[in-house]
Length: 524
Image (cartoon, rainbow, N blue to C red; front, side, top):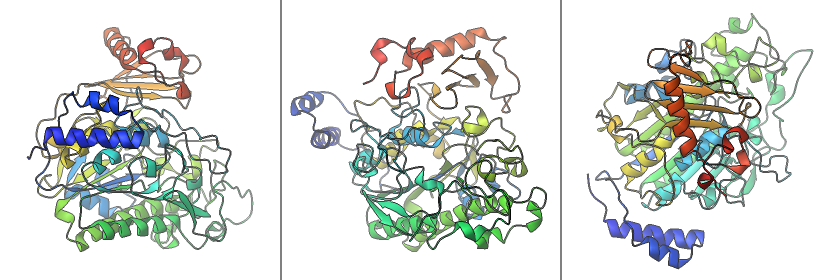
């Protein structure tokens, strides 16, 4: 490992932050008196490709035991890299999960703790923006001379706000800025940097029903399928930046409903699958589909094919050996709804055993909502076919990627993750200094805390909080035996530590714990 000159790194970081964030120079000068440590970087900076699926369940890949859905490209990633069996998202829904990933903070500290629209009054308003003061992974990697590009679903603030990806460290952005626009795979427009780029001459709205008559898939299709358009832009980014280190963030939208996958993939799955329940008519939200089981499998296989296209592009340019590829998901499979035959959007999660036996779904802090697949390939560093059961989660990627890239960590920003680099190369993991915390504002208000084998859960925090539950995840991955009554001392220890570290975020208030949080922990 090579050391980066300490004074040089910190000076350039502080100067850049002063100019970008309009920080008074006196404050910067004061900061320069402090120290800054970069733990070490590889002799040759690796390219970083971070692929984030949307609502992909823990058990929906072949390498995690899936029997029905074809995912050969991600399975090959696992065979050529390392597979995590206890990797967690930072939140059980889209926007806060992305916030924890981009900022390295868990939900006890993060600025975004639930899905919330920006409130700008537009049809596709974008989500509540992260602030100008927060530092993202992309910003840190820019300081290590990385080209940065994001292609897919953003969800952390509309264009021309502080949360825009272009204002948060990305040189290039293309995709769905607003999560609501992403409810349709045939939108009128996608966002290109901070401008809307029309891709279809019309729009298929993502929420429709067909209560009677034949359900026809082509009724909900137009000319340009957004995932293909997004993929093409991402591959162009690799072409243009192949001569320098790059960070390619790919928050792909599949398999989040609506179900509108290419017909060629649907036709590869048995028609008999959908004989039992028949067509989905939109009764649980999102668009109807004549063959919902085949369509859901097709979405995941199409996603897998896009992963394959990225890997082929890396190989085309001779970049495979010096590229770290991460594949994971933002949360678990979508949950049930009004019609018990289907989950939201027509998904039949029981048919596919989408959680591999874990409890709960998207929107839950039980394992099925937050434990996600994660595979990492890094030739000549990661042992092919290796598996780790080290508990890890989204806040860990900030310190990990910055270490591997030789990028500075933000001095003023509390980071909650640990460096996973030793885990990737088969060494002992560092001791986790912070509790793993999920402080979630939606779905009635939820909190989960994990410390070693123990996991504590509390629900309904926005109204009448339920008693704490406690599970030994090492022995009970299904969370079937609540041990809270047997170990009140564990509950007390975890809750005390949680309240002590927690900050108040007024935009995502949880009154029950806000009043217990130390006043000095409050944020603006």
